[in-house]
Image (cartoon, rainbow, N blue to C red; front, side):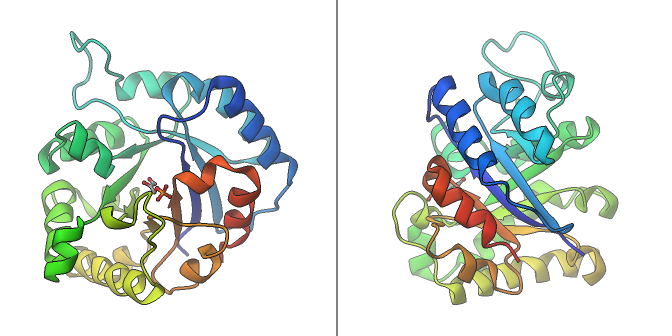
Amino acid sequence: MRKQIAAANWKMNLTYQQGEQLLDDILAANIELKDNQEVIFGVPFPYLTMAEGKVKAKNYHVSAQNCYNQKSGAYTGEVSVEMLKSIGVKHCIIGHSERREYFGESNLMLSEKLDLLLGGGLTPIFCCGEPLSIREAGTQNEYVEKQLEESLFHLSADDLKKIIIAYEPIWAIGTGKTATTEQAQEIHAYLRSVLAKKYGQEVADEISILYGGSVKATNAKELFSCADVDGGLVGGASLVAADFVEIIKGLN
Ligand code: 13P
């Protein structure tokens, strides 16, 4: 059975002390997860060890928000998969639309990051999703299909199964405008069908596909109730303890 996942993406928010407090407040809610449920905190690099120390007692996980597409060397300011691995990090978000837009990350670059992450035994949380212009033109399916094809389709079925996918329509990120449950279910089902076409239904059925884009305490449960939505990748609402607690409770 595929995992149902509540993942926080703090982005470039909070001081170290605020991050500690937020985690303490969320952990204090003492939510009991079912066997098929997972909670992951995508925190800034300097907070990874602190966050891991706090959440491991609850069997929650931490995630980096990025890594570099080279193994090591003269890449000032970058962080490698090996570095993440050496501090016990097991997850890494890649391909967030903010990184694609502000840092020019291409599908090819992401395929290289995927190989390094999988080679290091980390779980990639691979983000995809279309801008508003594409949604308005009605070509979102083709757009996200190409993102999957160019970044993921060189992988073996065994490796593909190790990935978490996050579908995040750019027009819904930080805008307060959430995809409707119909829109989310439709494109998640499409993404799964694209995976099934290439890797077979059994493999496609094992992959968690999270929805991201203005997930809130008030809409999480409904979104997560869609057959092909396996949880969420949450920005703004993950910075408020009470809201993220509700979102975790919204998992199936
Ligand atoms: P918001 O939840 O703030 O819309 O952000 C979504 C996101 O980008 C998560 O990665």
